[in-house]
Amino acid sequence: MKMFSDLFTDSEYVIISPGLLRLLRQHSNIASKMLPFWVVFCGDITRDPCRVREITYWFQEYTDNFFFWRGSEVEAICTHFIECIAPHLD
Image 1 (cartoon, one colour):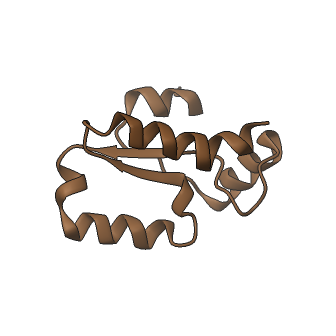
Image 2 (cartoon, helix red, strand yellow):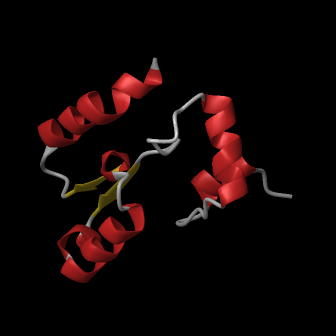
Image 3 (cartoon, helix red, strand yellow):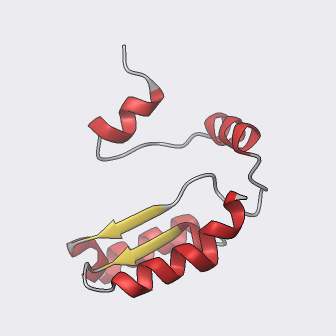
């Protein structure tokens, strides 16, 4: 039987259902204006305008919870984390 934590290491995709999202918010004490996870997209998907639009639409108002990383912008990903994610980890 797979545990929830195993999904993050053994699978490419993790589906976050409304019930699971509610449980993650409850245990993490993260407000509803944020998602209780951060996704970094990297590789070819970041260069595909169709995929970028699709992902941007899926996240909609949660723009702080994802980042398109092309692998060479180390400062950009660190800045995004420090400005958008770190303040919610206190």
